[in-house]
Image 1 (spheres, rainbow, N blue to C red):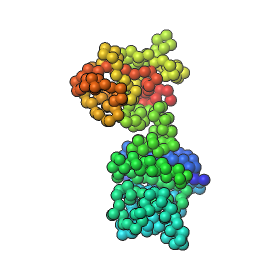
Image 2: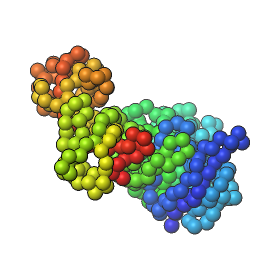
Image 3: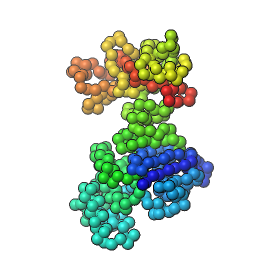
Image 4: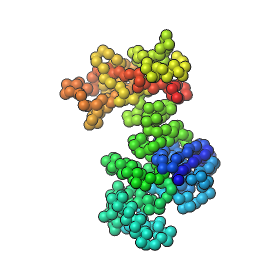
Amino acid sequence: MATVKLTNVKKVYDNNVVAVHDFNLDIKDKEFVVFVGPSGCGKSTTLRMIAGLEEISGGTVEIDGEVVNDLQPKDRNIAMVFQNYALYPHMTVYDNIAFSLRLQKMPEDVIYEKVTNAAEILGITEYLLRKPRALSGGQRQRVAIGRAMVRDSKVFLMDEPLSNLDAKLRNQMRAEIILLRQKLNTTFVYVTHDQTEAMTLGDRIVIMKDGFIQQVGTPPEVFEMPKNLFVAGFIGAPQMNIIKTELKKQGGEYSVSPFGVKFAVDGEKGAALKAKGAKEGEICLGVRPEHIVLAKAGQGIPCTLEVNEMMGSELHLHVYTEDGTRLIVRVPTVGLDAKEREGLKQGAKVWITFESKVMHFFDPETTENLLN
């Protein structure tokens, strides 16, 4: 078993700056949990407190039911992969991976078996006699992962391991980490600022801001039911469009009228608002760019096209409404004929619409999702 439990964990620095506030989380055995958030939100600090590299100001960290607050990192049975690889430049790949095992005075035949097995899994067998300077960034990161693998640790901690790689290599390494996780079948705690990494890798995602947990959930949960405006804006690329409007109720039925165009809120969303007893008043209406569609001329919300970004399989249309509100619309290129594409130029008039099932409703004061 390799569970991790954080109870009221806090980090306060000498100048009374609180980096992490009362962090509570139970990580199950063999679960892959991702901490995600903007720079300075406390995600790496929390990971370092689990590892023992950062002193805990309050609360407890437990690994397999044992409180490890006062244990040295080497005694916590964890393995950590850093952003900057942290390889010894004068050692070969083989010696870098074997280093911690030699510190434990393992027999050389056991070390050889562990190193070669790890190298085979990671596809770096042919590089075992090279020095780190002769490797690419992706190969160096595999060596760093291999060094952690051979320790047979209960918990894998990974601190932004892909942030130094280019976009193509990041995509490749994400897939390799997913495969590695299946082979190792252990508990992973992973830190990133990249929400795409979080969504593709994590069983659960912990979204943080200013040292506070904003939401914990599976990728579908945080995408489909963001707890507040911060989560709604952080998860999803491009980020969710937020529109200030009013929620109205007439004859037991709800509606919204962004930019003067009335949309009935029916189906599941309408029923959910009724169940919550939602009141009329100002709200922040959220609609993701991929859920907005182009409408026929004269139908829906009139907009002017400002920027058209060609993204390959889709277009990202940056539009502004008659009152100057800017929105982003994702349009699949499949199904668009040449004439339709030609019409999507800067300054073109377009109309947009969406259905009630894709709407999100937030309180403008508390920023909380009205349906949570």
